[in-house]
Image 1 (cartoon, rainbow, N blue to C red):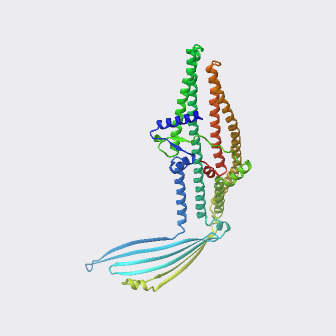
Image 2: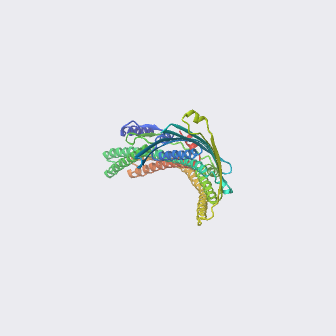
Image 3: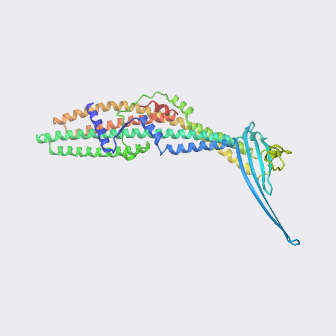
Length: 485
């Protein structure tokens, strides 16, 4: 235990000394929070796409809100007439302004229909050669109603598509968040493993140097051949090289992880938790598959795509079906009056009209038939994609689940092997000190101990990463993250 504490303190002091700023202790939860806030390599584009889809939905919905328009135009007429017989020239000018104000709104009505109501005020102001005002308020109402069953089902296609696309974009954003979480989890434990490799390399150095010291003392006592001392020196140099390699790998992982978290690459270093807590897999394979089929966002996305494809087929099938259009208008008009108030109060002229039409396309050269076939084949592709997704997800979950069960067994076995290898290393170093074995035998036992330790660290990292992957595959990654320290 004292040896491990000494090594951890060494790693902490080494990382701090090698960084322009003091290193900070970082838990997995803290790393995920930093990435969700500052990451610009994975989540930034997803956030912008999600915001764009929200704007697209708002733009489509805006068509069914109040619209108010104001316009003003002006005409200036100048005319000149010459009469040669009387040598008289007559000049006339006029200046007229046309301020207009209009407001309308559209409502979606049952059975795929739309109703639009409008209110407008058309004004004419004559400023030359005399001043006069004329007002013409009007009210308009229009109604559009598909007359076929397919037309009724597809009558509100634009708003249905916009809402479905926004929902799909929201699911895509959540999937990108999950991808970022998985990437952070992978990066965190890879960095943890790189830091453990530094510890392993340090232990290798310490062991090799102890053996060299013993070898040199035995050489002085003439109880050991000089070749054994040379071999021990080679082992020390090899251990120093291994430490340099581990040091370089740690630097690379530090930089990559800092970039993933959106931190300053050149001025950020992290110290991670000393040990990985490995829990027991507490879910059966059948339960994991059931949760995946119920929770996976990819399935919901595929279902939305299929729904939109089916709606596209219906809309295409109704493209040549009859549509009833009704429109009506009622308008008033005042006389041209030099008094603004009198013109605004008195409307002697009024009128209304109603128009109804039904459009029935008769022949389009087969374009509608081709569009329908294209829509049907697109729908068929979406159906097949959904089927394959539901087939592949259980296979994915089963592969991850079985890998976790295997890692559980490996961790238990390697933990026991590591204890035995550590005891064996202590024994061979003592035996070498008493001249009972050669330095080559010490090197072999040391290599076995270090390899076992590296395998155990790798199994722990693999278990945590696959545990996160299983949580993602079952649609419960956020719950998994909340259970971490």
